[in-house]
Length: 408
Image (spheres, one colour):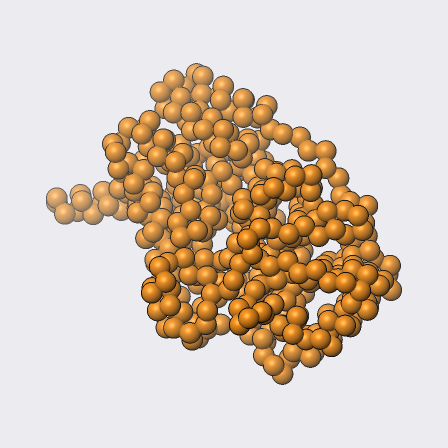
Protein backbone atom coordinates (compact mmCIF):
# COMPACT_ATOMS: atom_id res chain seq x y z
CA UNK A 1 0.00 0.00 0.00
CA UNK A 2 2.84 2.36 0.86
CA UNK A 3 4.58 1.61 -2.45
CA UNK A 4 1.37 2.21 -4.39
CA UNK A 5 0.88 5.50 -2.62
CA UNK A 6 4.47 6.55 -3.38
CA UNK A 7 4.14 5.57 -7.05
CA UNK A 8 0.96 7.64 -7.29
CA UNK A 9 2.73 10.58 -5.67
CA UNK A 10 5.66 10.38 -8.13
CA UNK A 11 3.28 10.14 -11.07
CA UNK A 12 1.42 13.17 -9.77
CA UNK A 13 4.68 15.13 -9.54
CA UNK A 14 5.53 14.25 -13.14
CA UNK A 15 2.06 15.23 -14.38
CA UNK A 16 2.27 18.62 -12.65
CA UNK A 17 5.70 19.24 -14.15
CA UNK A 18 4.52 18.16 -17.62
CA UNK A 19 1.41 20.37 -17.52
CA UNK A 20 3.46 23.37 -16.39
CA UNK A 21 5.99 22.82 -19.18
CA UNK A 22 3.21 22.55 -21.77
CA UNK A 23 1.82 25.92 -20.70
CA UNK A 24 5.36 27.38 -20.68
CA UNK A 25 6.04 26.13 -24.23
CA UNK A 26 2.59 26.51 -25.80
CA UNK A 27 3.27 29.85 -27.55
CA UNK A 28 6.04 28.24 -29.64
CA UNK A 29 3.83 25.42 -30.90
CA UNK A 30 0.81 27.65 -31.37
CA UNK A 31 2.96 29.94 -33.51
CA UNK A 32 4.23 26.89 -35.42
CA UNK A 33 0.61 26.26 -36.48
CA UNK A 34 0.02 29.94 -37.25
CA UNK A 35 -1.85 30.78 -34.03
CA UNK A 36 -0.55 33.96 -32.39
CA UNK A 37 -3.37 35.11 -30.13
CA UNK A 38 -2.46 37.70 -27.50
CA UNK A 39 -5.18 36.64 -25.06
CA UNK A 40 -4.19 32.96 -25.19
CA UNK A 41 -0.48 33.73 -24.90
CA UNK A 42 -1.06 36.11 -21.98
CA UNK A 43 -3.20 33.62 -20.03
CA UNK A 44 -1.04 30.56 -20.74
CA UNK A 45 2.13 32.49 -19.94
CA UNK A 46 0.78 33.76 -16.63
CA UNK A 47 -0.50 30.30 -15.72
CA UNK A 48 2.94 28.79 -16.42
CA UNK A 49 4.72 31.38 -14.27
CA UNK A 50 2.22 30.92 -11.43
CA UNK A 51 2.58 27.15 -11.43
CA UNK A 52 6.39 27.36 -11.41
CA UNK A 53 6.10 29.43 -8.23
CA UNK A 54 3.72 27.07 -6.38
CA UNK A 55 4.13 23.47 -7.60
CA UNK A 56 5.98 21.00 -5.35
CA UNK A 57 9.76 21.09 -5.37
CA UNK A 58 10.09 17.70 -7.07
CA UNK A 59 7.78 18.81 -9.87
CA UNK A 60 10.18 21.65 -10.70
CA UNK A 61 12.73 19.15 -11.98
CA UNK A 62 10.19 17.60 -14.37
CA UNK A 63 9.06 21.08 -15.40
CA UNK A 64 12.60 22.07 -16.36
CA UNK A 65 13.25 18.71 -18.02
CA UNK A 66 10.22 18.91 -20.30
CA UNK A 67 10.74 22.63 -21.00
CA UNK A 68 14.30 21.87 -22.11
CA UNK A 69 13.01 19.13 -24.43
CA UNK A 70 10.05 21.14 -25.81
CA UNK A 71 12.17 24.23 -26.48
CA UNK A 72 15.44 22.67 -27.66
CA UNK A 73 14.82 19.14 -29.00
CA UNK A 74 15.70 20.31 -32.53
CA UNK A 75 19.35 20.82 -31.51
CA UNK A 76 19.97 17.13 -32.11
CA UNK A 77 18.92 17.29 -35.79
CA UNK A 78 22.27 18.76 -36.86
CA UNK A 79 24.09 15.61 -35.70
CA UNK A 80 22.73 13.64 -38.66
CA UNK A 81 24.99 15.67 -40.96
CA UNK A 82 28.05 14.43 -39.05
CA UNK A 83 26.82 10.80 -39.04
CA UNK A 84 26.40 11.04 -35.27
CA UNK A 85 22.89 9.58 -35.12
CA UNK A 86 23.66 7.74 -31.90
CA UNK A 87 24.07 11.08 -30.11
CA UNK A 88 20.54 12.30 -30.91
CA UNK A 89 18.75 10.70 -27.91
CA UNK A 90 21.69 11.57 -25.65
CA UNK A 91 21.54 15.24 -26.66
CA UNK A 92 17.79 15.43 -26.01
CA UNK A 93 18.21 13.72 -22.64
CA UNK A 94 21.20 15.90 -21.74
CA UNK A 95 19.40 19.16 -22.52
CA UNK A 96 16.40 18.03 -20.49
CA UNK A 97 18.57 17.09 -17.52
CA UNK A 98 20.46 20.41 -17.56
CA UNK A 99 17.27 22.46 -17.45
CA UNK A 100 15.67 20.03 -15.01
CA UNK A 101 18.51 20.65 -12.56
CA UNK A 102 18.36 24.43 -13.15
CA UNK A 103 14.61 24.59 -12.44
CA UNK A 104 14.99 22.32 -9.41
CA UNK A 105 17.42 24.91 -8.04
CA UNK A 106 14.58 27.45 -7.92
CA UNK A 107 13.80 25.94 -4.50
CA UNK A 108 17.39 25.41 -3.47
CA UNK A 109 17.28 28.05 -0.72
CA UNK A 110 13.82 27.26 0.58
CA UNK A 111 10.39 26.56 -0.79
CA UNK A 112 9.00 30.04 -0.14
CA UNK A 113 7.20 31.61 -3.08
CA UNK A 114 9.33 34.73 -2.53
CA UNK A 115 12.70 32.98 -2.78
CA UNK A 116 11.51 30.91 -5.71
CA UNK A 117 10.40 34.05 -7.56
CA UNK A 118 13.73 35.75 -6.82
CA UNK A 119 15.76 32.80 -8.16
CA UNK A 120 13.45 32.51 -11.16
CA UNK A 121 14.10 36.17 -11.93
CA UNK A 122 17.86 35.58 -11.57
CA UNK A 123 17.52 32.73 -14.09
CA UNK A 124 16.55 35.27 -16.78
CA UNK A 125 20.18 36.47 -16.68
CA UNK A 126 21.61 32.94 -17.04
CA UNK A 127 22.96 31.60 -20.34
CA UNK A 128 24.17 27.99 -19.89
CA UNK A 129 27.24 27.40 -22.12
CA UNK A 130 26.50 30.71 -23.86
CA UNK A 131 23.13 29.47 -25.16
CA UNK A 132 20.39 32.04 -24.51
CA UNK A 133 17.39 30.74 -26.44
CA UNK A 134 15.47 29.55 -23.36
CA UNK A 135 14.34 32.99 -22.29
CA UNK A 136 11.30 33.21 -19.93
CA UNK A 137 10.45 36.77 -21.05
CA UNK A 138 9.81 35.33 -24.51
CA UNK A 139 6.51 33.87 -23.32
CA UNK A 140 5.01 37.35 -23.60
CA UNK A 141 6.46 38.48 -26.93
CA UNK A 142 3.02 38.11 -28.55
CA UNK A 143 0.87 39.09 -25.58
CA UNK A 144 -0.61 42.09 -23.79
CA UNK A 145 2.37 42.23 -21.43
CA UNK A 146 5.93 43.53 -21.86
CA UNK A 147 9.17 41.63 -22.42
CA UNK A 148 11.67 43.68 -20.39
CA UNK A 149 13.27 42.60 -17.11
CA UNK A 150 11.03 45.12 -15.33
CA UNK A 151 7.96 43.60 -16.97
CA UNK A 152 9.00 40.11 -15.91
CA UNK A 153 9.56 41.33 -12.33
CA UNK A 154 6.05 42.83 -12.39
CA UNK A 155 4.62 39.54 -13.67
CA UNK A 156 6.34 37.62 -10.87
CA UNK A 157 5.01 40.15 -8.36
CA UNK A 158 1.50 39.74 -9.76
CA UNK A 159 1.70 35.96 -9.36
CA UNK A 160 2.92 36.33 -5.76
CA UNK A 161 -0.01 38.65 -5.06
CA UNK A 162 -2.39 36.17 -6.73
CA UNK A 163 -1.20 33.57 -4.24
CA UNK A 164 -1.29 35.87 -1.20
CA UNK A 165 -3.59 38.83 -1.92
CA UNK A 166 -5.89 37.86 -4.77
CA UNK A 167 -7.79 41.13 -5.03
CA UNK A 168 -4.83 43.27 -6.09
CA UNK A 169 -2.77 40.88 -8.22
CA UNK A 170 -3.91 42.65 -11.41
CA UNK A 171 -2.19 45.95 -10.54
CA UNK A 172 1.36 44.96 -11.66
CA UNK A 173 -0.12 43.47 -14.85
CA UNK A 174 -1.88 46.73 -15.68
CA UNK A 175 1.39 48.58 -15.11
CA UNK A 176 3.18 46.20 -17.50
CA UNK A 177 0.44 46.70 -20.09
CA UNK A 178 0.74 50.49 -19.94
CA UNK A 179 4.54 50.30 -20.11
CA UNK A 180 4.36 48.64 -23.54
CA UNK A 181 6.45 50.79 -25.91
CA UNK A 182 5.18 52.05 -29.24
CA UNK A 183 7.46 52.07 -32.25
CA UNK A 184 7.51 54.65 -35.04
CA UNK A 185 10.11 52.86 -37.17
CA UNK A 186 8.95 52.26 -40.73
CA UNK A 187 10.54 50.24 -43.51
CA UNK A 188 13.32 51.95 -45.50
CA UNK A 189 12.50 53.39 -48.90
CA UNK A 190 14.28 50.61 -50.72
CA UNK A 191 13.00 47.88 -53.01
CA UNK A 192 14.39 44.78 -51.32
CA UNK A 193 14.37 41.25 -52.72
CA UNK A 194 14.72 38.23 -50.41
CA UNK A 195 14.32 35.13 -52.60
CA UNK A 196 13.35 31.97 -50.73
CA UNK A 197 16.09 29.31 -50.74
CA UNK A 198 15.52 25.69 -49.70
CA UNK A 199 18.85 23.96 -50.30
CA UNK A 200 19.07 20.61 -48.53
CA UNK A 201 21.93 20.51 -46.02
CA UNK A 202 23.04 17.09 -47.26
CA UNK A 203 24.00 18.56 -50.66
CA UNK A 204 24.96 22.10 -49.69
CA UNK A 205 28.69 21.40 -49.30
CA UNK A 206 28.98 18.56 -51.82
CA UNK A 207 31.48 19.58 -54.53
CA UNK A 208 29.38 18.11 -57.34
CA UNK A 209 26.53 20.53 -56.53
CA UNK A 210 28.67 23.63 -55.99
CA UNK A 211 28.52 25.07 -59.51
CA UNK A 212 24.79 24.39 -59.76
CA UNK A 213 24.10 26.23 -56.49
CA UNK A 214 26.30 29.16 -57.50
CA UNK A 215 24.55 29.40 -60.89
CA UNK A 216 21.13 29.45 -59.19
CA UNK A 217 22.27 32.30 -56.94
CA UNK A 218 23.53 34.28 -59.93
CA UNK A 219 20.23 33.69 -61.72
CA UNK A 220 18.37 35.09 -58.70
CA UNK A 221 20.58 38.18 -58.76
CA UNK A 222 19.99 38.64 -62.50
CA UNK A 223 16.24 38.35 -61.98
CA UNK A 224 16.36 40.95 -59.19
CA UNK A 225 18.28 43.31 -61.51
CA UNK A 226 15.68 42.80 -64.24
CA UNK A 227 12.92 43.65 -61.75
CA UNK A 228 14.82 46.79 -60.72
CA UNK A 229 15.38 45.94 -57.05
CA UNK A 230 17.75 48.13 -55.05
CA UNK A 231 19.00 45.28 -52.88
CA UNK A 232 19.00 41.49 -52.90
CA UNK A 233 19.64 39.53 -49.69
CA UNK A 234 20.75 35.90 -49.89
CA UNK A 235 21.02 33.72 -46.77
CA UNK A 236 23.98 32.58 -44.67
CA UNK A 237 26.60 30.62 -46.70
CA UNK A 238 24.48 30.88 -49.85
CA UNK A 239 27.66 30.57 -51.87
CA UNK A 240 29.13 27.24 -50.67
CA UNK A 241 32.74 28.25 -51.16
CA UNK A 242 35.48 30.34 -49.59
CA UNK A 243 34.39 33.42 -51.47
CA UNK A 244 37.41 35.65 -50.84
CA UNK A 245 39.60 32.97 -52.45
CA UNK A 246 37.37 32.66 -55.53
CA UNK A 247 38.57 35.60 -57.63
CA UNK A 248 36.46 34.74 -60.67
CA UNK A 249 33.21 34.67 -58.68
CA UNK A 250 34.18 37.83 -56.79
CA UNK A 251 34.60 39.69 -60.08
CA UNK A 252 31.25 38.46 -61.36
CA UNK A 253 29.49 39.68 -58.22
CA UNK A 254 31.34 43.01 -58.29
CA UNK A 255 30.22 43.59 -61.87
CA UNK A 256 26.61 42.79 -61.02
CA UNK A 257 26.77 45.23 -58.10
CA UNK A 258 26.87 48.09 -60.61
CA UNK A 259 23.12 47.54 -60.95
CA UNK A 260 22.08 46.26 -57.52
CA UNK A 261 23.47 46.00 -53.99
CA UNK A 262 24.10 42.37 -53.04
CA UNK A 263 24.26 40.98 -49.50
CA UNK A 264 25.12 37.30 -49.30
CA UNK A 265 26.69 34.79 -46.95
CA UNK A 266 29.80 32.73 -47.55
CA UNK A 267 32.98 31.59 -45.83
CA UNK A 268 36.12 33.69 -45.51
CA UNK A 269 39.64 32.36 -45.01
CA UNK A 270 42.81 34.17 -44.06
CA UNK A 271 46.06 32.86 -42.56
CA UNK A 272 44.53 29.40 -42.17
CA UNK A 273 41.62 30.73 -40.09
CA UNK A 274 37.97 30.52 -41.13
CA UNK A 275 35.16 33.02 -40.63
CA UNK A 276 31.43 32.71 -41.19
CA UNK A 277 30.89 35.96 -43.06
CA UNK A 278 28.53 38.27 -44.92
CA UNK A 279 29.66 39.98 -48.13
CA UNK A 280 28.21 43.30 -49.28
CA UNK A 281 28.78 44.15 -52.95
CA UNK A 282 28.02 47.69 -54.09
CA UNK A 283 29.26 49.69 -57.06
CA UNK A 284 31.97 47.11 -57.86
CA UNK A 285 33.32 47.17 -54.30
CA UNK A 286 33.04 44.53 -51.59
CA UNK A 287 32.86 44.83 -47.80
CA UNK A 288 33.07 41.77 -45.56
CA UNK A 289 31.51 41.41 -42.10
CA UNK A 290 32.59 38.49 -39.94
CA UNK A 291 30.38 36.82 -37.40
CA UNK A 292 30.73 38.20 -33.87
CA UNK A 293 28.79 35.64 -31.78
CA UNK A 294 29.48 32.00 -32.60
CA UNK A 295 26.99 29.17 -32.07
CA UNK A 296 27.88 27.22 -28.91
CA UNK A 297 29.03 23.68 -29.87
CA UNK A 298 28.20 24.43 -33.51
CA UNK A 299 30.87 26.95 -34.49
CA UNK A 300 32.80 27.10 -31.24
CA UNK A 301 33.04 24.84 -28.20
CA UNK A 302 32.66 27.04 -25.08
CA UNK A 303 34.93 24.90 -22.90
CA UNK A 304 38.62 24.95 -21.83
CA UNK A 305 41.10 24.37 -24.65
CA UNK A 306 42.00 20.73 -23.88
CA UNK A 307 38.35 19.70 -23.64
CA UNK A 308 37.51 21.79 -26.73
CA UNK A 309 40.25 20.10 -28.78
CA UNK A 310 39.13 16.67 -27.57
CA UNK A 311 35.53 17.32 -28.63
CA UNK A 312 36.61 18.70 -32.01
CA UNK A 313 38.86 15.67 -32.61
CA UNK A 314 36.22 13.12 -31.65
CA UNK A 315 33.06 14.63 -33.12
CA UNK A 316 34.20 17.10 -35.80
CA UNK A 317 37.13 15.25 -37.38
CA UNK A 318 39.67 17.64 -35.86
CA UNK A 319 38.07 20.78 -37.31
CA UNK A 320 38.96 24.01 -35.54
CA UNK A 321 36.50 26.52 -34.13
CA UNK A 322 35.57 29.43 -36.35
CA UNK A 323 37.19 32.77 -35.66
CA UNK A 324 35.01 35.67 -34.59
CA UNK A 325 35.11 39.42 -35.13
CA UNK A 326 35.63 41.83 -32.26
CA UNK A 327 32.63 44.03 -33.00
CA UNK A 328 29.51 44.14 -35.22
CA UNK A 329 29.52 45.67 -38.71
CA UNK A 330 27.10 48.12 -40.31
CA UNK A 331 26.58 48.15 -44.08
CA UNK A 332 25.77 51.43 -45.83
CA UNK A 333 23.19 50.51 -48.46
CA UNK A 334 21.98 53.35 -50.66
CA UNK A 335 22.68 55.79 -47.82
CA UNK A 336 20.87 53.71 -45.18
CA UNK A 337 22.69 51.93 -42.34
CA UNK A 338 21.98 48.22 -41.78
CA UNK A 339 23.49 46.19 -38.93
CA UNK A 340 24.74 42.80 -40.10
CA UNK A 341 23.81 39.66 -38.17
CA UNK A 342 24.40 36.01 -39.03
CA UNK A 343 21.93 33.43 -37.70
CA UNK A 344 22.38 32.89 -33.93
CA UNK A 345 23.87 36.30 -33.26
CA UNK A 346 20.65 38.01 -34.40
CA UNK A 347 19.17 36.62 -31.17
CA UNK A 348 21.84 37.99 -28.82
CA UNK A 349 22.35 41.34 -27.11
CA UNK A 350 25.97 41.50 -28.31
CA UNK A 351 25.05 42.13 -31.93
CA UNK A 352 23.01 45.18 -30.93
CA UNK A 353 25.89 46.83 -29.04
CA UNK A 354 26.57 50.43 -30.10
CA UNK A 355 23.80 50.22 -32.67
CA UNK A 356 23.14 53.94 -32.21
CA UNK A 357 20.93 55.45 -34.88
CA UNK A 358 20.94 52.31 -37.02
CA UNK A 359 17.35 51.08 -37.10
CA UNK A 360 17.60 48.26 -39.61
CA UNK A 361 19.21 44.83 -39.47
CA UNK A 362 19.92 42.17 -42.08
CA UNK A 363 19.85 38.74 -40.44
CA UNK A 364 20.91 35.80 -42.61
CA UNK A 365 20.48 32.18 -41.55
CA UNK A 366 20.89 28.62 -42.76
CA UNK A 367 18.08 26.81 -40.97
CA UNK A 368 18.39 23.70 -43.14
CA UNK A 369 20.45 22.25 -40.28
CA UNK A 370 17.30 22.01 -38.17
CA UNK A 371 14.28 21.70 -40.43
CA UNK A 372 11.62 20.51 -40.30
CA UNK A 373 11.28 21.53 -36.64
CA UNK A 374 10.22 24.37 -34.36
CA UNK A 375 13.69 25.98 -34.57
CA UNK A 376 12.75 28.59 -37.23
CA UNK A 377 9.67 29.55 -35.19
CA UNK A 378 11.68 29.99 -32.00
CA UNK A 379 14.32 31.97 -33.90
CA UNK A 380 11.66 34.27 -35.37
CA UNK A 381 10.06 34.82 -31.95
CA UNK A 382 13.47 35.65 -30.48
CA UNK A 383 14.18 38.12 -33.28
CA UNK A 384 10.78 39.69 -32.60
CA UNK A 385 11.82 40.00 -28.94
CA UNK A 386 15.05 41.80 -29.87
CA UNK A 387 13.32 43.94 -32.51
CA UNK A 388 11.00 45.20 -29.76
CA UNK A 389 13.80 45.56 -27.22
CA UNK A 390 16.02 47.66 -29.49
CA UNK A 391 13.34 49.18 -31.74
CA UNK A 392 14.85 47.74 -34.93
CA UNK A 393 13.33 46.37 -38.15
CA UNK A 394 14.91 43.00 -39.01
CA UNK A 395 15.10 41.60 -42.54
CA UNK A 396 15.46 37.86 -41.98
CA UNK A 397 16.67 35.86 -44.99
CA UNK A 398 16.92 32.12 -44.36
CA UNK A 399 17.69 28.92 -46.21
CA UNK A 400 15.27 26.16 -45.32
CA UNK A 401 12.63 28.29 -43.61
CA UNK A 402 10.38 31.22 -44.42
CA UNK A 403 11.91 34.67 -44.98
CA UNK A 404 10.27 37.41 -42.97
CA UNK A 405 10.41 41.11 -42.13
CA UNK A 406 10.16 41.61 -38.37
CA UNK A 407 8.97 44.97 -37.08
CA UNK A 408 9.02 46.14 -33.44
